[in-house]
Amino acid sequence: MDEKQLFVALLLAACVARLECKWPFLGTDWNMREFVKTPEPIWTYSTSQATDIICKKDSKLFVTLQSIVFFRSYYHKKRKLIFRLQGEFDPRRKARMTIFARDGTLNQTEEIIYMSRKLTSAVVQVTLNFGSYAKLYDLRVRNSTTREHIEPKCLDVFRSRAVRKIYVLYQNRCQYLP
Image 1 (tube, helix red, strand yellow):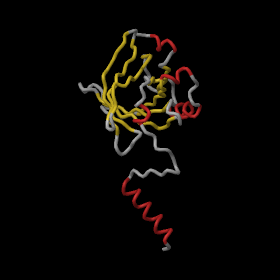
Image 2: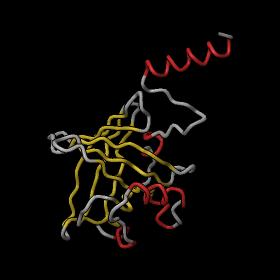
Image 3: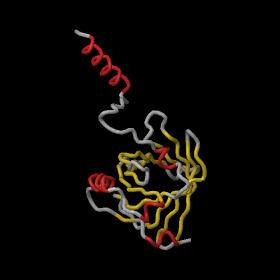
Image 4: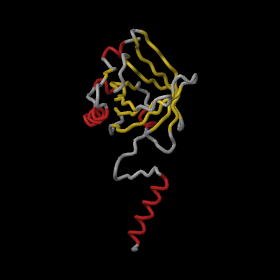
């Protein structure tokens, strides 16, 4: 076996052993922390989850290398609900964080499967970690993107994942609701 074949075999073995190999030439390493550390609110523009909420927004309180604390708010039947949540960034899978509430009412994993180059929008796979492991998909945008066009590739990736019905949560009036 020549040196090149030996190197490829060792590289493949190392990747299989880790079960977490990131091939830089096959895809991009998305980074959840980079997307959420903005001072801007992040809106869930649309989702694949059947819902009757509107104006779902995440507002950062503070972020560290390991975690983020933020408020998630939305309107449900004309009533505003606000939750203080914490997200723990996965040190091995940078695109992923686990979100939980102190009282244990929420536990879910959120993972970026596509993000725009300018970090203005992302497609997030949401997995509920209690009882059901169903995967849902959100299209999330930074506040400044609500006044611009969402990157077409981001929209395409979201539509391909949200194969059934798409529920739009963001409306222009969301900016002006208390």
